Image (cartoon, rainbow, N blue to C red; front, side):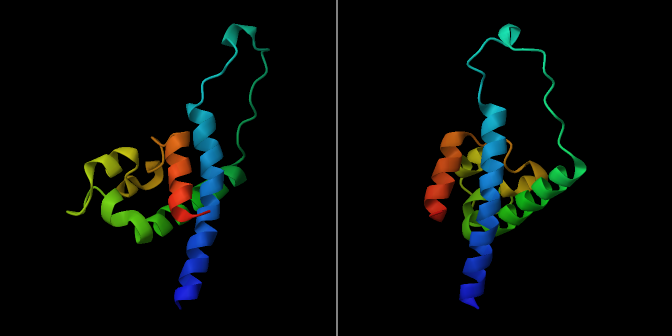
Length: 113
């Protein structure tokens, strides 16, 4: 059974990869001044993409609760304020909103993905 849990955890962390790109893109600042960029509207995500992202986010959150929840859940007495400041798994859909590239790299390193 432990092998199945490890596979499920690793599978859900693959979802973390898609979150990483989305979070990094959101937090990175453009290197070109906006006025010099062409007036091209970014395509809006389709409902299917949003649903896939939501599922990957929740699957990753559940996997992280099992591995890191004691420190990254603000509702638990065992939480660590510095850990919750990086991400709080009790924030449901917004748990990853404050993550930056450095945090994601540390998360990937700890998860060994």
